Each structure stands twice: as structure tokens, then as C-alpha cells.
Amino acid sequence: MKDVFKALTCCGAVAATCLAANALAQDTFPAKPIRLIVPLPPGGGADGLARIWGDYVARHLGATVVVENRAGANGSIAAAYVATQPADGYTILLATQSNLALNRFSYGKLNYDPDQSFAGVGLLATTPQVLLANNAVPANNIADLIRLAKASPGKFSYSTAGKGNSTHLNMEIFARHVGVDLLNVPYKGSAAALLAVVGGETQLTSAVVFSAIPFIKEKKVKPLVVFADKRVPEMPDVPTQAEIGIPKSLGGGWYGLVAPKGTPDAIIQKLNAATTKMWADPESRQKLGRIYMAEPADKTASAVAKSTRQDAEQWGPLVRSLNLAAQ
Picture 1 (tube, rainbow, N blue to C red):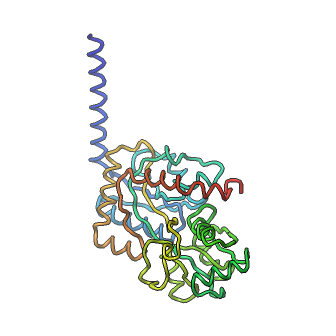
Picture 2: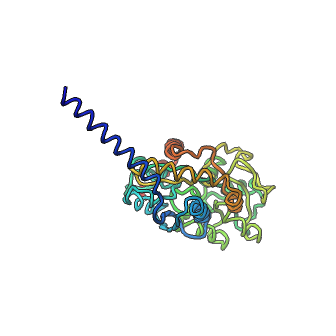
């Protein structure tokens, strides 16, 4: 009986110690700069989103946030790096639909486990994409493009930000739905893919609206379809995917925040609360609107794992059918 009492006492002491440590982590965090690892190059929508988040968190929590870009392998390089960092809340990954949900189907092996290496902090934002055509393409609307592509199978190429990226899969969903044969030309990043269609190296691409708008306004490309549920005010005549009969696409994907597995829950909740409050901050919300970021319906910490699971189940078969891991 004494041994049982002793064991229970020890368990209680351990639990109390854990609770005290958790409370201390919450009270003292952040005590040094937070690094936000972005899996994409500077200058794009994801980078802008990261810097808006960093600016708000710096003001809200009183800590410096350093945005660090580690692009490559469709976000896998950044994810693998963060997975190996200390679980103390000071290194966070800007997670994407690609590096958490889709890369497992596009690459033979990942140096991280999308489901086990991270603790979700929360969903950050979603954003639309738009199908663009080079000005030399004799199509002023999507019906024209479909007619031309059907008349010349394989003639029209589209640039993408990399294999299995949302820019790739949106075009593949479109091509399969309307029954056309298009040639995929992967580039190293979304900026290069967009410039390829502007310069005429490819005829088509799918790009996030934030990056595409300047070229659309300068009439360097033609917008034909928005991969989103709503039309974009700056392109009022451009139909959505649903309006041309496509029930679902990846759109611009989603962005979330994750920390290394084992990060104290108190720190996770503190970061999640700051992320949620960012959307209620008028200044931050205005900045997010300028880069065409939309507020996710569910911003809880568990929403990251939920979205990852749902997208892996929904889009995994499509990615598998492309046999990207063997390429």
C-alpha cells in the first residue's frame, strides 16, 4: 500500500512539475526573437503574409519576428528544417497545402513526416489563383481557349511553380474537366512561372491574384478564370471556376503555421491567440486585403491537421495519377 501511495505521489509530483513548466513557458514566452521560416522566395504573396503576421505578433507579443526564406522542393526544404529545430516555439514554419498535404504524393521520400513532425498553431489565410493567357494566344475568354486547345492537342503549354504545386494541379484539374491536352512546363518558383507566360515562353499559367494583378493591369496577360468561389473585384468580368462548371479546385491553397512536435501547448495557444487577433486588427486586415488574403473560417490549432488530412484524401489520387514521384 505504501508503494502504491508512493507511486501516486510521484505521478502527482511529475504532473505538477509539467503544469508548472507549461505555465512558466506561457508566462515567459517570447523571451527572444521568433523565426518564421517561409518555404517560398521573397516578394510573393506568402512572403507578404508572413511579414504581416510577423509585424502584428511583434506588436502584440512584444518580440522580434525574423522572416527567413528557405525555398525549394515545393516547400519541403523548409519543412524538413523546421522539423529538426527545438520544440520551444522560437522556430515556426509557414506551412502550405503543398508541404503538408500534397508533397507526400509528389516526391519519393520526404525528410519529415507531414502528420507527425509538427504541432499545428493555426490556419493563417487562403488566397485565390487566376488562369492567365499570354497576349499572343487568340483567346479573350475561356470558351475561346477551350476551343483552340481542343483543335490543337498538346500545342498549348502552361508554366507552373513546380511539380505537384497548386499552380500545377489547378491547371490539371481544369484540363481534365474541360477535356483538353495541355503541356506542363515546371519552373523554379511561382515568380519564374508567371514571368514565363508574360514573356511568351509558355502560353498559360495559374498564379495567385496578388502576383498577377500588376501584369493584368498593365495588359501584359489576359485573365480567363478565377480559381475561387467569388469573383475578384479588380476582374469583374472574369468568371469563377464554378461558373464554368468546375465544382472544386485547389484555388491558391491555404497557409498555416506549425511548430516542431512537442512544443508546449501553452506556447501553441499563445501564438494561436495572436494569429486570431491579427484578423480582428483593422491595420493588419487592411494589409492582408491588399495582397488578396482571405480569412479562414476555422483558425484553431487543430484546423491545420484537419485541412492537411482532407486535402491529402481529396487530391492525393489526382497527384498519384500524374506519377510525379517517379519523375
